[in-house]
Length: 169
Image (tube, rainbow, N blue to C red; front, side, top):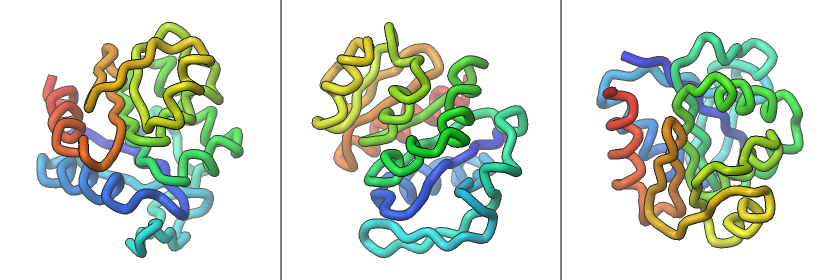
């Protein structure tokens, strides 16, 4: 069993949160939802309700084995908060597994660590990743060592499979 942090805030793409979290839990992994403050109520774009388990100030990357970044408008909001950027940066620098879908890879741009990484993301995010120095692919899932990225809800089956495969190793 691995401990997986999920960073998320309002306007997350519901299924990009619910589907991977369900797959992770079903496989026996522990999932901790992190937002600005523990107990905060988060609303997805389509109404899913999520309660934050921890606040970002009380979460340490050292306590987790991996990180999930669902898409929607959530990552764009989180990247404006240096605490979340630093949290993601710590995972990337420690080479722990990071899983990001849709707009999730926007956070990699803020870390300054996208250069040279092979990634995918939602259509409008791919040019931003390219300009940040990433090698960008238009594929359902791209695995670059411990970094797993995906494009849209249509790719969730492949994304979830890649996440579980990465954690199984």
